[in-house]
Image 1 (cartoon, rainbow, N blue to C red):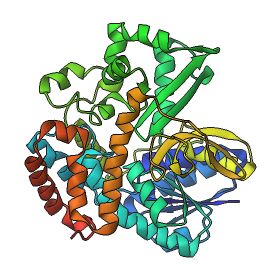
Image 2 (cartoon, one colour; image 1 turned 90 degrees about the vertical axis):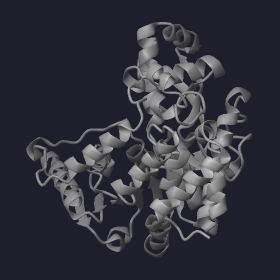
Image 3 (cartoon, helix red, strand yellow; image 1 turned 90 degrees about the horizontal axis):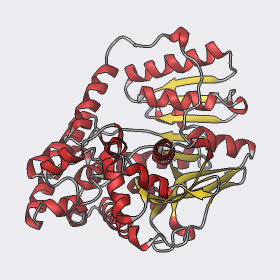
Length: 435
């Protein structure tokens, strides 16, 4: 009966999805689910739904709820991190300040000014969680869902002995999209994916032993299909491989799509390309945040049941607990050299074999030369952010922003310096003490 702790459980929709995933496995249905958040109202909502799942499905699971992180972490076997540090104000700063300078981010949670500063304000809190885990549950596995994934996981790899793995749904979501574009069942699509989080690539994708890439290129020629995923089809057209992150996300990781308003509008299509407009995600996030602060829970508790989503967490825990082997695409340290042409201290997203003995990253070899530069750029920025945060080095933060591909495509070095100083001042209360 493992104890599975959720830190940041006030993220109601996502947390309850993961709780349902866990309880959907018979072997995990008697787990202790410990829910923790500093927001009592949102925590109460998540707890009500989780308890209703247990009651409605007549399960043996125990649901615990607390605002005390120490209580939640004590004797935990698994810790799921999904915290958001600072709420709306710093998130809006990270989008609106760069926007005034002409840096048009789409989401701003991975690299770019938004991702860098989100990482900076999250690292101190994550290190506090790691310190508590070292005292209370040193053998627990930390499953990180918070972005920026690579920056946070790399921080953990470098600073703590707590076993850490990063989980993201971009690979299964992309597999679903590809299968739809070429008209094959998703469950029958075989793929081999590697890179860094949000900038990984479908190196192979096969159906019935044959590559689906010819069919995918043919699908791209259909205007209706192209409009569903404009940026990713453009990246495949020019660089040969289909990337794992959605078009609106991918557009801010490279210098090609967000420096001219006309290009942004031209790339704004349907489905995965529908959020290309600047700051659409920010406004939607603020709206959802206000809804979650509503005193009324807009859920029929009598109808809440257990379902299994595409998320990896429950499958990983199930494999660790039962020994059932699975291959999942996870974010791990490159210390084993899984990707030969990325640094060994990088956080990489690769196929990982999971069973009762642990996590075993697969060897990918070298990424193709046509796409290697993209993750290499991201790793360089991520390394500077981690070093800047851990060493309290203000200059390294400046250099990280200056090396961001989208920012560098839009601004001069002096403009980037000025923008970064403004971001540092606006978010000072959430950041490490920088010299």
